[in-house]
Length: 252
Image (cartoon, rainbow, N blue to C red; front, side):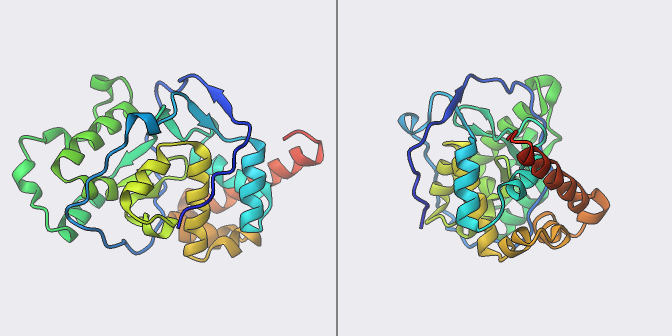
């Protein structure tokens, strides 16, 4: 099942993100089953020529879907996406964090022998080379591209995607019918990334924690057991208060 994409006024912007660092938050949940033969194709005519940014209407609509405050969603965006609130590296290219450990895990699950590619695909198994590609994010994009030539589904599953850094292995929990839909929607707009996030947190039952502003529970389930040492819960709480103050002043 996918969400309806309601037409709305969207803010179009040129490519501004030339050097976006890889994000680090890793939602924890059970990996979904996927076929070994999955192949993903993103057709050129399905990718918008510009980055479709989130609008106030997007925040309002998805907050209503979840039954949470707009400020609560914005608090999560602040912490997960950073001050730029960016979901894309370039049109059709969502921000990605290719995770080698997860890639290896998914390769074992999918019965892919990665040792065969140690030399021919050496850069997949090395640290992202920001100097060579111009930025850490550009290097991660290239790593993912090359990993997909080893095994498409495994590379997608071993990557954390978009402004909410959702693991590709969670495609089914995001309400997608298949892994192709997950990548297609991630590559379309920040609104689609927000909808995938909403479906994901509902699937794993932490929309209630967001509704109650139970930041510790939300961060533990979403960011993992290291959430406290990284201060995810306290940072979200502060971001929420900041957005509530802005709303009170009429400044969105």
